[in-house]
Length: 295
Length: 295
Image (cartoon, rainbow over all chains, first blue to last red; front, side, top):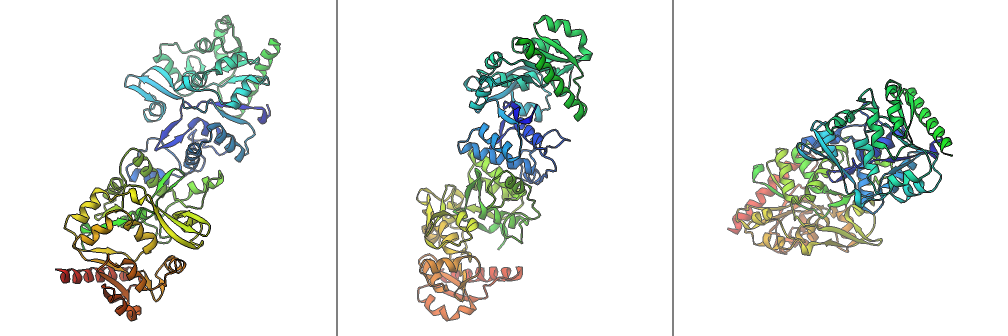
């Protein structure tokens, strides 16, 4: 897929106000990664960042549980200021992709405020409070997307979903509950994807009953869902045409197919750049096969 | 003077909103200086600061004419956030002095917003725009303190001025038009100082027809005022009891005395820490002499 034909729709339910700054962790991770300036060690933030701000903040008693590097801070400060001036989040994001020479489009799921809140044994927790500060330790009871009912996909996303030019929609192997559901909670997105005419394909974030990374398995258990690729298929039922699962889960193929979802087996555990590239090719090919079948 | 008996009232007319941050250059310079963490080379900002934020900001197209170091930024971000939560500027400043172990009180002239605006040939310019961005180059026509009529001294400053415990009031050798007048523009301050019972003493910022530092002489010329210690005396007439002038200006002594202002001659050019210390002692002694005379 040529990068200029790729549009990435990004979860902004993880966004939050920190020190009055509008922080967009998922958007920034993607921007930095596609700009080639991400920090590969942490998985977030910028490469070769410095920490003077955090050190000085600690000295004067500011909260330090959410780490913002000095360079990372520049994007957050400029974004906050730009949004306050009336610019939309999608416009600001587009300006940054252009500035960093990123050919793909990066589109926030909505320009309106949607906030992922985890209902836990400790009460409702904002996403970053749950995820970063408390390291996903509190037991999740349910997940809310506050503000979603008043949100809408931005004009650019609307155009992409309804313009008839989509070749495929790929749902990445992300946490369905924390990373994909926020996007699907925005009114209109789920319907538009179902009607767009392009195959919708997901990659399972679960292999052999455990998550590829992060707290997906823990959360599924807490929500009373048996963690398996089948549960992922059930979760996305009615939305996806195909699910890519790991060869280790071959035994689940029939169950998933019985849900009316096409299954493809592949190695979905990515340990290297080569693995990521292979998986990307596999999923695009899978979508192509489904697309042909649909036509 | 024991540091715990010293209260420094600080100009906040230079404060401004930059990237949505509440920046208080004069307050911070004083905080950093008394905390021993100021940058002696620049005269502003923190020692051993780093510049990753500014570099990253430049990369993404943010304005870089006002330099904020990474550590300096921490104070600005925390202040902005704290003020938005409803804390006053004087409370926040007091918290920082405590945290840095500063024994003296540092008090903003007001908790309300007063903004120094320079009317110039280019139109009205916000102070930092005039001072930093344009390096005081535009010709000044007049100076306004916007918001002053709605401002008031904070409770702590009010108490100091009217509590009857003041031994002396010292007006530092600062620019009278840009640094002292903003303070005097706050309703109540001028009257309270006149009535406080303590001698009010100023140190001339002008020697031999030129300013000790900064644009004082340039501005006086542009405003049609002949730059001299006599003009400083005329400017503070009715407020001050005494004016400390340089021995080089001995010829002006009689003119100033004729305005009803006591004059003391001294070396007021500070080239070293020793000079600063000597001048401080001289001015305190001068105030003491005047205080005795008043009683």
